[in-house]
Each structure stands twice: as structure tokens, then as C-alpha cells.
Length: 94
Image (cartoon, rainbow, N blue to C red; front, side, top):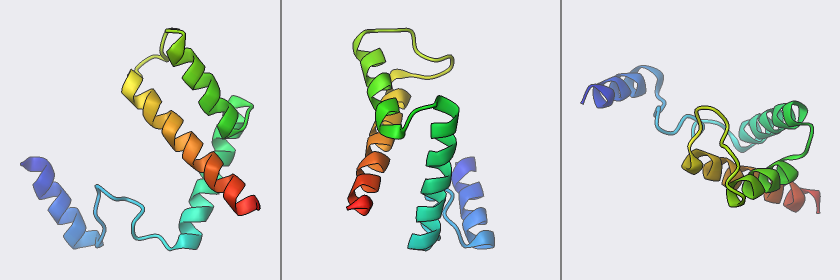
């Protein structure tokens, strides 16, 4: 209940839904944000997001230890996100 009260206050004060932090962005702003985050991920990992998704997917299939503090579901969510970004980038490149 406390969370819903805080969410309602934030929505009222900021006009933004905390459960959907990016819905107020324009398409251009969202694209820029995706590029920024993707660039940072690629710089940190040393590989593009499609390759990163495959490495994470292979680690899950081979039952390798998970990164500290991450659950299997969180990693599966990252894999899906990375694949979505990679798919979007290849679509826009055409």
C-alpha cells in the first residue's frame, strides 16, 4: 500500500508513472537513451549486445555460476532485452 501511495504522489507531482519511467519520452529521446545504454554496455563488456546475449545464454545452458546478486530470471530478462536491442539495431540499419 505504501508503494502505491508513493507512486500516486510521484505521478501527481511529476506527471510520470514510476512503473513506466520511459513512457514520457519521445521516440527520438528513447532512441537516444537506447543508444547511450547500448554503447555503455558494449564498452563495459567489450562485445556488441547480440554477442553478449549469446554468451549469457550459453552460460545459463551450461549451468555456469551466475553473477553475484543476479537470478536466472533477471539474466533471462537481460538476454531478451539485449536481443531486442540487437534486432532493432539491425532493422534500422537496413
